[in-house]
Amino acid sequence: MPRAVAPQLAGLVERLIGAPLPIRLRAWDGTEAGPVDDPDAPVAIVRHRRALRRLLWNPGELGLARAFVSGELEVDGDIAEGLSRFWKLAESQGIAGLRLTRADIMDAVGVAARLRAIGPRPKPPASEARLSGGLHTRRRDRAAIAHHYDLSNEFYEFLLDPQMAYSCGYWTQEDSSTYGLVDAQRDKLDLICRKLGLAPGMRLLDVGCGWASLLIHAAQHYGVRAVGVTLSAQQQSYGLARVRDLGLTDQVEIRMQDYRAISTGSGSDDPFDAIASIEMGEHVGQDNYPVYAATLHTLLRPTGRLLVQQMSRGASGRNSAPGGGPFMERYVAPDMHMRPLGSTLDILEAAGLEVVDVHSLREHYVWTVRPWLATLQERKAEAIALIGEEQYRVWLLYLAGAALAFEENRMGVHQILMVRPDTRGSTGLPRRRQAVLGMESAAAVADNGAVNGHPAVSRPA
Image 1 (cartoon, helix red, strand yellow):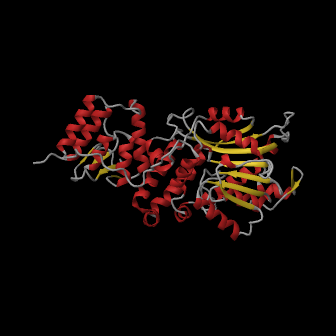
Image 2: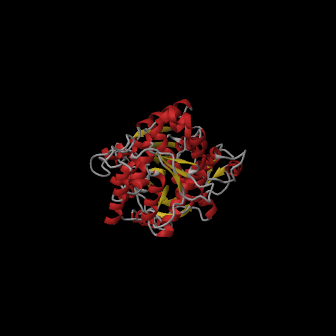
Image 3: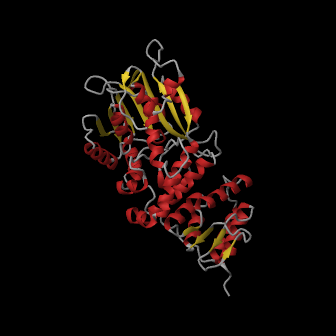
């Protein structure tokens, strides 16, 4: 009589990690193993022996990710809870960087042979990124951005708020029936505009403008003339259509352009009064970040303000993988590089920018990602119709893992407000901190009638 599969798999895993399984395991033969005294434990379902073969060829996160994305491995229950249990186990056992010994490998091969899982390396899922060319060349950067952001405008419309803001919101109230994701994203856009000191007639540059949420908000409510650049063809086309439909073509321009191609001087752009770059700096790479910082400095007029909203990893938290780990690097954001906050500040200051304020929004990202994840799970059939089952599994793992990483302080996100001093070292900033950071409510600003000598423009409460 054949031996039950699940106990053999569970025994192998427990020998490798040196601890009991934190979740239950259900194998393709219907057998189960794992904790019996925890009815709420998520269940990992190994649907096909090919999942084991993937792990033999790629032990660790990459093999697991490929098995999950391909549908050979699934989770019954809260996927974020399952990930959390494994992460806590890795911490407690010191196995985050587990390396298999020769004896471990022979043990795994023996189990796989008994289960008839030995065979050639399975092909990676179709949704895995396959980039070519030199790291962070302009051609490769376009391909990396297209991999994630050109997935489907219809899918991003389905997932995001109507403003199409795909970055951390700013939650000024508890989530409730009268305040939610739409409000938090609006409040984030308004916070950025206030920190930048925007006023009618000013010129704003948005580097990595996405689907134009900040450009439109700043033009509508702060009266600026705005230029946005993106490497995503779908983002540009969507943003241009929104601008046209809202009658803002005289105020907003959206270019398909690399940040390294923006220039100032004769026949080019004049320096901008203010610049924003929202969760784009993670994509420029470690070696290119000084170029990115220097470019932003050059494009900003003296005494102009710059706001960078950017994710961090590795110093305050407990995970130093700059690309987010094998799954993120292969399926979500290829070539992304996140560094500790302090390292980013060093590079920005070396470019000649003066850091005025650093604002952590880490927990705000938990509150932002959770509604995205809830939409994905609650409307699974619609999501699959838009992007297919494989990409659905990519996004399920991505959003669940992201919520957990921010919640457990393995990733951070900050708004960094800077200024370019003039040749005499003057910043031109107001003396009061409140005035510098624009902490007044939008309604209060409108009621006051003027900001820094500029007439107020109607803004949302």
